[in-house]
Image 1: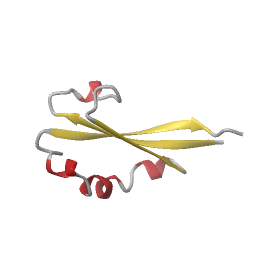
Image 2 (image 1 turned 90 degrees about the horizontal axis):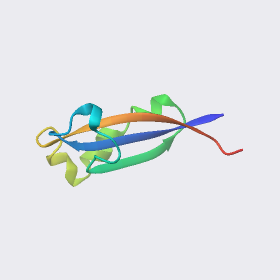
Image 3 (image 1 turned 180 degrees about the vertical axis):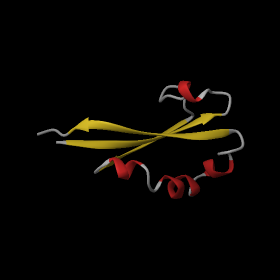
Length: 73
């Protein structure tokens, strides 16, 4: 059975979207979720509670990814 990791990358506007990776992001947030739908919800609230909220859309942007992981059995 598989599970998913929801990933939010915070990248500077100068970083092209295809180059916005874990290594190039100024911040990376990850959480394990039960399914792909879990990757798409809740991030706005999490980011809104941080200091990042003032910069997103001005000097940085968010990129979200959903990564499949194998459960240890």
